[in-house]
Image 1 (cartoon, rainbow, N blue to C red):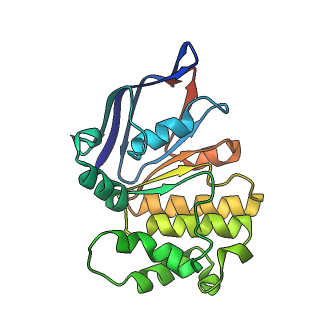
Image 2 (spheres, rainbow, N blue to C red):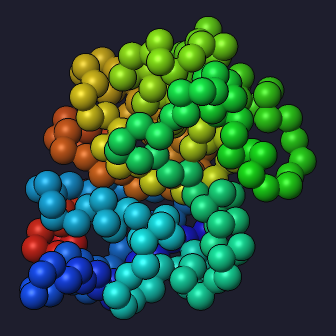
Image 3 (cartoon, rainbow, N blue to C red):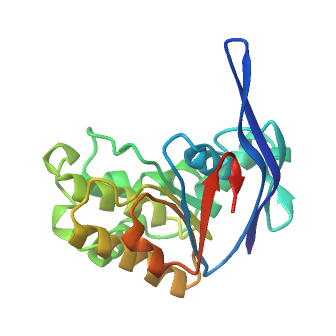
Amino acid sequence: MILEVKNLIKEYIQGDDLTRVLDDVNLSVTNGEFIIITGRSGSGKTTLLNIMAGLTFPSSGKVLFSGQDIFSLTDKELSAYRNSKIGFIPQVSSVLSNLTVLDNVRLPFFLMKRQGDPTGEAVKILGMLGIEKLMEKSPKRLSGGQLKRVAIARAMINKPDFILADEPTSDLDDQTAMEIIKVFTELAVNGTGIIMITHDLETLGHANKQYNLIGGHLT
């Protein structure tokens, strides 16, 4: 599988001004690659990730999943892409406080009809992330690092081809951050493509490729 961004442009109208956040961005990621994208705050990193996830439409350009432009899909097909082909980890916690850790992780499994054992798979992933003992806990009782791991587990539950992670190590201590990077590295070794946005320069050496977003251009 391959996830490609081609000639991507994203513009916003702010008052009387037209601001181009992304300017002719091109990127190609294959299964098993670990890609890191850096850049200053406001440089468009999150916008790029949201477009790759199909959450935001570009002004022009394409996002291709194995040759298919995701923005040519129907709403139902685009939802299936987000649910099955990618795992998305937003910067701001989206863990649901009214569900247990286990139910948060299993939730994406039930959004589409599919075969399998979501409980067994969720327990396995939580064990991989070292938080299986928290599965019956409320997210309200978890630390920031534990909440990040729940979000990662939820992104992994449907065995996506690619994981898109927006600042997954932000606000974490060095040890916890490196543990999360280790998980991503292992996922990449086993064939999952990882696209991660970060300000944490210590993580750069773990990626196959590093890009910098400056002035709307990816270099």
